[in-house]
Image (cartoon, rainbow, N blue to C red; front, side, top):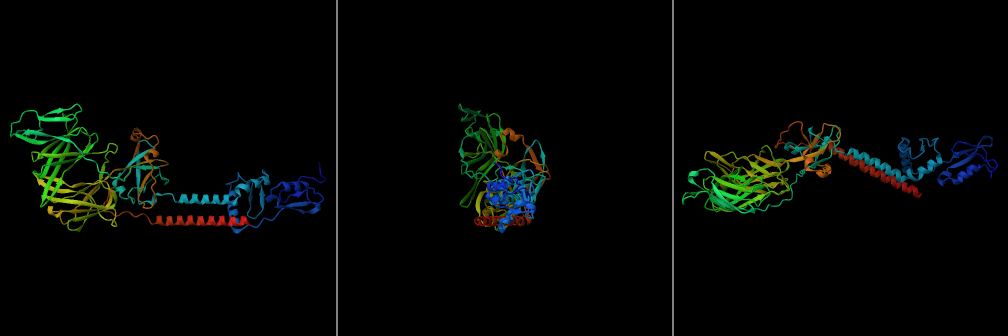
Length: 570
């Protein structure tokens, strides 16, 4: 049904209505007014114009709360730059006029914008997300945040590269577990990396394994020649009996050494512990040889044990280090004295098959100080997981039963970490030297050696000390442009390393062997007496600034949310 005076009504502000009903309201205007949402319908009114025409104008905008108005201004400033143009068809000008895009109907655009993007909570969430993104970008690690930056040279096939950290680089660490290691590319972007555990595994005392031993006899005329023997073995290879190959007359036999049956131990051999009769005191020197078939022998170096009496006390050195290899049999032949003592027991300590021995890196000598007579103290640049220490014994014929203590800093008590007999003695125109102590790998930064002065001590001045630490390897995934830089030395950063299995998918021994290598572009010499390099003070101000921006942003967002909710209730 047609109505008189009905005509097309353009609902946009400022347009002229062609015809009106008797009450001054167009039919289309009434229909559109009824169909529009209340938020839209309530914002339009009709005024009479010249010539009996009427002008549809936009009603006054409702007055908004100050915080709500600030949110809307920030929001419309963002969408006016094109960020959310695909979601809304109209923007709010700075003068308060509404601008309509010709392609879209304003009512549809308004209906789309109002429920979703114009919701105050949505605006606050987007602004908060932008603030957090900016803070995260500013908080990213930079090479300048670290005390030491070492350029790297790459070789081999990537994208994974492995580098063994030199001791000179490790000394710049500010965290004992090397959590402050980073690798950066030329743009200063941190690289994903994995680091071998520097903290030793939970300490557990290895169980000594007792083995059988068999005497090796020879004649005095044989000299240093290895005894020729007959061996009877069982079906599994264990030794049952050992006899000289030729008969030796009574009174002419000389006990040259001992044969140890280690066939029951499959793991690498790391230490030999023997005990002998009390009649033989002093130092015992012997050679160590290894074999798997009792025919072909491999030289494993020299061994030395000692038993010394001081008044009513006895000092013993019964442990001998082994190279960490596997063998079914060991042969010990005495050098000095020429005859061996009677053994009471023989034990071997082996390494776990799934944790092979880690190679050690020796440091340059460290100068110490005398804390009190026969007590010497050394300060390291940083905490290190020490596997061995070596004392520089300069005076000949020095003998020192000693106990080594360690701690991480001056605020903690001293803890005993090793003990043993240190000496440098002249025998047969040569020096017999025992200057090392074995440690468990505990991380320490201060060392103290207490010497029993009944052996003569080590002199009035503190001897120099060297430490051996396990080699540490870093594997990183090269991303971006080189050159790459190894950075270390920041006490406040958190650990960012990944496990090796996460860093390298489908990890295997073959794939690990084909990784590229990285090495420092310039060789650095470890300076054990140097004070730690201080991290630039600007890092602290930067961190304070970031926290200030974050707190202000949280307060600002909370104020906007509170003001918006209060305005909504009104």
